[in-house]
Image 1 (cartoon, one colour):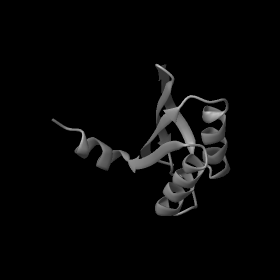
Image 2 (tube, helix red, strand yellow; image 1 turned 180 degrees about the horizontal axis):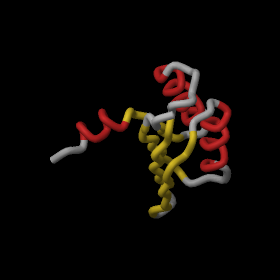
Image 3 (tube, one colour; image 1 turned 90 degrees about the horizontal axis):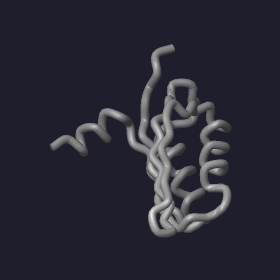
Image 4 (cartoon, helix red, strand yellow; image 1 turned 135 degrees about the horizontal axis):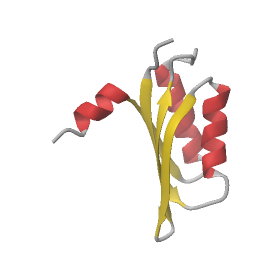
Length: 92
């Protein structure tokens, strides 16, 4: 199966369990993490993930809402964008 890539971004106050929580939600939806980068800058947690949504049966908009809701419950901003849209928005 050809990968369908998307970009997940997570921003907010650092707290225990952010990576585990996001990865558990994605795994439950059959979303595979292809690459991950995270850092903490002066107490602020930032993470960017490249994921493969090819095996995810949940509609993309619903997955996006699940991530948004998960983040809101923890004071985080979590977004997912299809790779082609992400790339188009960030070209110079």
